[in-house]
Image 1 (cartoon, rainbow, N blue to C red):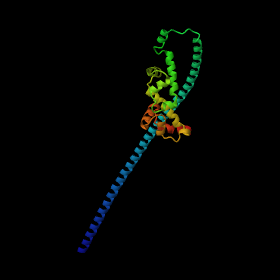
Image 2: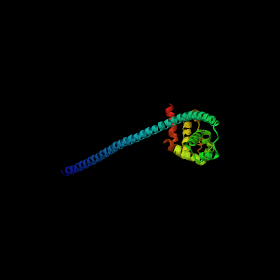
Image 3: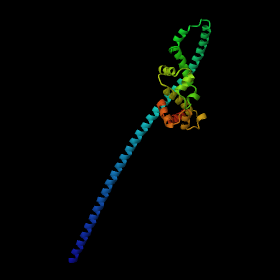
Length: 246
């Protein structure tokens, strides 16, 4: 009887131990399940955030691409408009030359004005003289070899135009509504755009090479001016010209 009681006690202890072990395993499994659920929720949340972030990035890139495309198209239109103005200016110059030839022929038949009248007439810049200076400025600025020289200056412009510096500066301000530096930058960057888009002649040039070819030693200065004039970076402009050509 004694041994039977002891055996029962041992069996009871064993059962209790196994029960506690089972309870411990169940608690561990429950904890693991909770951790797995938390991890799964975290993964789902992270995935959802990633999708949102990627969508925002894609939207931002799309907006930037659209804006750059508008800037590119706008500047291409400006270049085309400039070329049309060049043609009109050439026609105007021909007509002006014909009128001038006719006026000279007519003046030869008139008595020469006295010295006092001539002195008064040329003592100020009248509109006719401004027209002539304007036309000459535009002619000189279309001379790519000149304006792309690194040392091209307003003094050199005045020399080529054939009028005093202060006259040229006054006409730039009144007729073009800009100073010499701004005008030079616009003409140089316009020429740079042509060269960046001309893969046949300048396809082997780097951006630094193009910058130097239009008068800029520093790529940084060139990039800043390019961005100011066109609204685009040179690398972005090159990419868009290639896309437009495809």
